[in-house]
Length: 283
Image 1 (cartoon, rainbow, N blue to C red):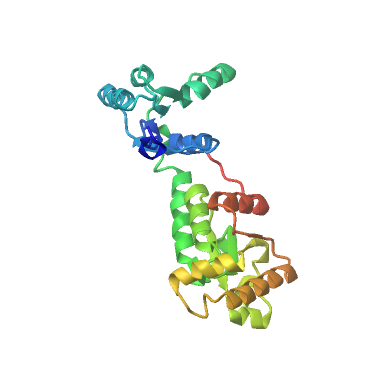
Image 2 (cartoon, rainbow, N blue to C red):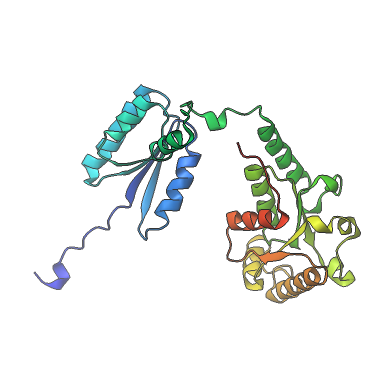
């Protein structure tokens, strides 16, 4: 057979990955992403939340086995099932089952000399807890103080983010509020601030709470052009000017800052928490 007539093999399907949980599956999904990111291959994720009964466990077990039979490859299965019967059903499938609870809970029971509660969805049962209420309050605070909308109650802010428009202040503020219950206000540095060569007077008294975000001018121009294409606001020259002026101002005023260009929201938030030395009770 000539090279021209040689059949082309179809591309391999991405490896199936089941995320099985008796709750929302957020914990298992986060863990799975962290682990699978270490491997340079394609995966396709199948979320299966709220498996809180034996009947549902049998249903997901059937899905896993059917996928194995149809594709001829073992699905990878990340589970956080608390119920021992449901867990056993999923473990006895044709998938590679990575049981997070068995991996971590059993050694902790031995170390602490204490049996775990084995309560389904316990992480999400605390909607009336003080920590949960703090998170909701922080989200409302961050929304009210987004983009310099309000200067009221800034004394209640845990952190005030400053930086040029579209440098990542809003998503970082909301992530800090949602994930950590941090009250984060944010203020956009504008040409008027650069002409005065200092921060607005409303922020001066809270300098110890201020943290700055910067960004590569070329990347900033790309982001702004998506919003206002061809405008002076998005022009590369203007972006260079604003970024240079903002960074110079932060240096003059002793404000700690970082570039958001190549960092994820998670990395930015973690750095901010380290810098402002804010601790929260997580459990």
